[in-house]
Figure 1 (tube, rainbow, N blue to C red):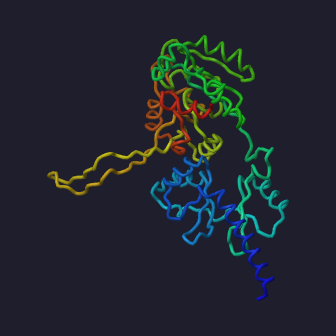
Figure 2 (figure 1 turned 30 degrees about the vertical axis):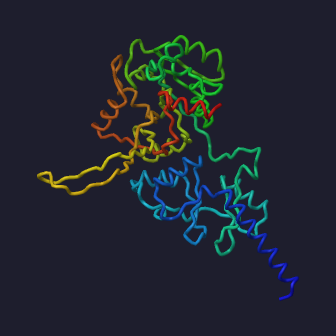
Figure 3 (figure 1 turned 90 degrees about the vertical axis):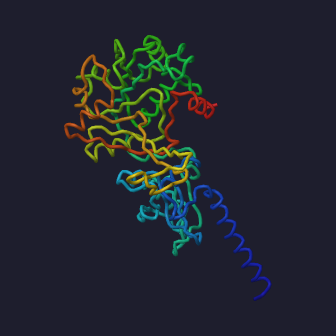
Length: 375
């Protein structure tokens, strides 16, 4: 081989290596292996602030993409959080071809509404990846049609966990950056097409109504007031005859990083009466946990085990006929309504979100973390 050819080959190899390392550097924190568990992938998504991971095998060969939707559908199918992701990988995802022009690749992303498009050789080797924000920096991805469901916001509580701040401001008006938590919540629902809001008020009701009416007139808000505390869902009895479609219910002190159209789609497809948005929480017991048989005989000792639980975030989808099942002027909680539905054979579904997708800013630690993110 001549010196010129050697130099040429060396340059080509260098270019290939630079291209490879360039895209790998961009996705390095988002690479997982087929043996990774669902719960580990959820944690990675939370840590990397992403909803999409790249799956490579031990030989550093690209296998596929894993989205938050893949994990959510698996959890809904009752697949264990400790299951390996190779059991749920979707092999029908769309990828780009190395010999396709940039224009063709961009058209594929637009047509299929793809957040990212891995570029593959004919042998399946990944050579690059296009992200929507890179090729369409000034264009938001429109992934689906908008929906227009009513939203009920429960804003009547005293916010006791945030005292003394809530001695002055009612919880819905607590600031997050330059907006109130109520505005942040309403804007999230507005972004998916929801335009009608019903706000349940009690504590400092006049202040809430005055602020929202004078500072954000673009929202269509109807206030309804409970004369005394009626529990976590009791005041919704005041909406009888006013809502005739499925509707969202949300507490006024939580934020959930989730497209709620996914929740509604799950609600409809599974014929649920109520759908609960549930966060996956992991807890580690700081002690050795003992299991015993009869007579106290030790069967197993597990050192500091981890527990994965689903917890209620305070966001729901309800069918409209349930309003009639809420007693009037009576203390009534969401758990009471759920038990009533279950006893009559109704169906309650749970839609999972990752741990850090849910922020309960009704308590000081989480509120302080949240406002730091918005500084």
